[in-house]
Length: 178
Image (cartoon, rainbow, N blue to C red; front, side, top):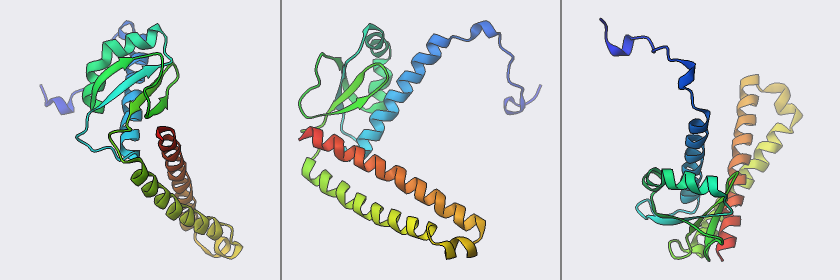
């Protein structure tokens, strides 16, 4: 009767809800997000397909990986999903709730160049954080600045601190590679 975009959402039965399927797809999404995040942090070339090795897992995690490996490979640019007892040499490890995801990056990235790049970014960010902390610790600034400006500075500080934590995590991962 009307365009689909103007139609109402269908009312579906509660018995169609599958908590196990919802949990599994949430696990897959978290894994893909974490792999993509590490790829960006480590400056892995966008076109490079890398291997993924699952360790520290139980049967349930291995079965989830088996059922969803094609999606994970396609969406995270993984050449092969494997399971093993130990992580390969030169791997970056991503801890998850029921397993560890290992990405062997030793031959894919130049560790020294990446470490220098991350350290430079972290130093710049720490300088910005000190400036924001100084500004927000200044009673004169807090007394004279409008509330929205103060809130904006607090948000910038929170974002910068979160970014600093990500950079420190990336440096830790690089140190593990060697």
